[in-house]
Picture 1 (cartoon, rainbow, N blue to C red):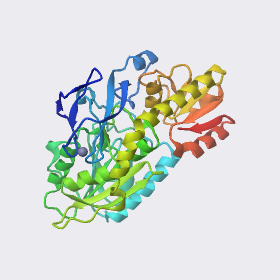
Picture 2: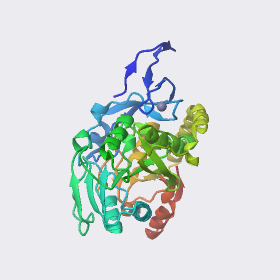
Picture 3: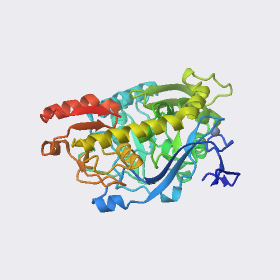
Picture 4: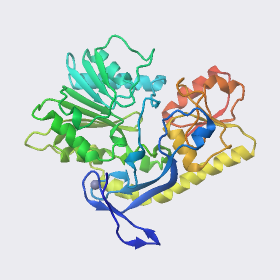
Length: 406
Ligand SMILES: [Zn+2]
């Protein structure tokens, strides 16, 4: 937990200084606040009522001027209970599974994983680990509290085992040639302790690879992408902040890249040798992060205002609006903008989400085919990378809606 110390009073509000969970320097600079967001945005809810009464909390992002890290300074770890009832999988999308396949091949090649053993911390439903182990001819162990063995999710050939639990000190004895951690670090509040535990786990094994994939927060700030800010994500890294944390905790960052249309950071690291290596070009982003953090509050408010106006005027003109994507981005978009009947539904190709309701606003999540009964005039795609795939799906259904993306 972050240590919170009462500080001075400003504008009648408690003005608290908190320690940066990455570099431990005190910071009090807030750059974003949402009064009430659902504590989970990937959870499946059976009715609109249940969805609307889902627990909410406040979210307030602080920016650390020392290391460029952004974090929710009022994050309450106690409300975060992960269970097997979560549906975070994106593997139903052709665009996403194509990306996952080529990333798995890249990791297999770079880390020379043939015949080796891979540990994935936060493996979700295990799809990527399976892809990687098959592609590399490696064995795997996945840890995730939300792992669930569903029929048809590609069980089979690979030699993989799973532990349904949180990763923590109890698992520090595990050994692997490569430790993989994708889309997990942003859910951890004590990030430095987490990375330190992995470093301790590796001990003297100097050849072990550590591969992390984490959303790029520099892009979120640059694009005012408020739909990418939600409660589960308490930690936001720019490529530089990410690499600085690993170097601080005894790793050498050997490669840093932006993938998936620049949305995700992929970082390769090894235990640091005695001589520290020079920072990679992508790491030198601290000044840019300062500039982005400075202007973010004004830009993000303008962006939210534009979307509210657009959805309200479309609704007022009798246009039927749907979102494409029923995951975290849609939930954040709807709840942050406080959208109700202006949007009629969220479409999702993941069959595990269809028939459920979005936490917070209670919008129904429907299958693409259900659009035939009520053709939309406007489709808002929650991730620009899926626009081509969405247009193709709409064409196949004989629908000619206007398609825009966030
Ligand atoms: Zn910091």
